[in-house]
Length: 265
Ligand SMILES: [Zn+2]
Image 1 (tube, rainbow, N blue to C red):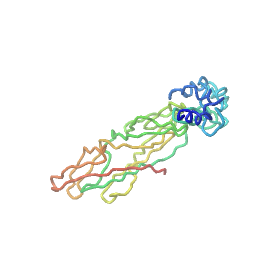
Image 2: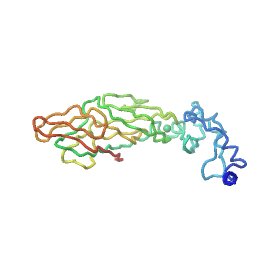
Image 3: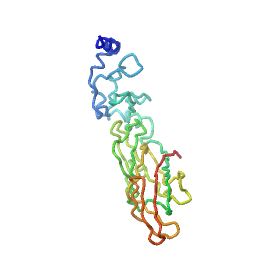
Image 4: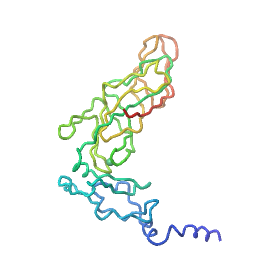
């Protein structure tokens, strides 16, 4: 009897059109890319709607349509895709090219650090090869990078069409838009004893489509003893805590409870 009850409960979700749509296997994560949008399979129904909205027929936005402005998605429309976790939105890179400047408008985002400093000050990233490990989101379609990626001051990539340069230029795997992010070197600030346990901006990024959403401090930080001036030049904050001993001052030093947040400027 129990089995029958369960089946009856499920009945409304497995009838008619919905059942057919639900039976379709989910496409892989890589499937709804720009190039394959025209050949994607029928999709399961979107939550909160009667059935699977069929946007498939005319959604193939080909590279060649861009310049001619023939991409129907260029009318500001967005298509939907099944991402494996839920419904998401795919913007059209072609639309961006046809109707507005190809590069997204810049947005400055500040990375703020908070930590508890013990007998040290002037905590800072060391050198042009310091790696800012970030997870980034495409500002167009919302795709989030799965891996940590790093950007460095020493890396400079030219933007298309002589629009300057960036620390990283990356084509979004999902919507194919070319995004970039740049470290603004003049905004890099040290975290000092007086900033103790308060959020302070330590760097700003100029984001053109690539928006940092997570930060992982790793190696490459330096700091100094507050009174002694002893330099500690190999600080790794990956564990969010670091300790050492200042021989000159004869006291323990440390950096604890490192946290961060992003703030739009
Ligand atoms: Zn994208």
